[in-house]
Image (cartoon, rainbow, N blue to C red; front, side):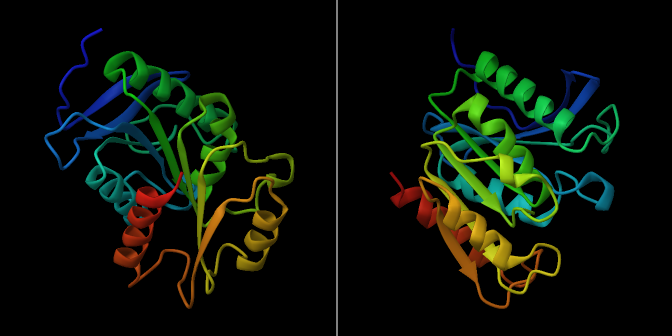
Length: 214
């Protein structure tokens, strides 16, 4: 299959419960894309969309590293069909989107990232997808059933603000410590849930980790 060139676009793709609203953005470099990166947004019932600033910054960092980035709205958000499904249906959304990206772009590798609720969904999906990199920002370990979820042997980065008012930072650190293999973790002193005033620092941390992780 000939890999089509990347064209920046919004489009609707078929999902399990109807349309999925998708935003495709091309890497900064004109070289052959290094990966396709799927980025999952925060909680749909709390205003989360693919245009969230943390989600945007994750996509920006990964495009700078040579990935085609695919942001998308979970079911019930924007022009995506359906309604909130506690992370179960949203995981199906990610799996279907990854299948489409594999068929359409034939990427050499897949990267997967998520913020808050999106990190829960990314974690649920990663065992089925086996991405080469997994990035979890402010994973809500005390709000969803992380106890039954574990990491595979995939280079993984967890980023957490120590002044997060939504996610308990100490719970995240405990969960990270319990994982085998243990993921890399970067803590941001005094950073809140949305990394206000720290987004550039977040982007730079992701970029540096991606360039040095093996």
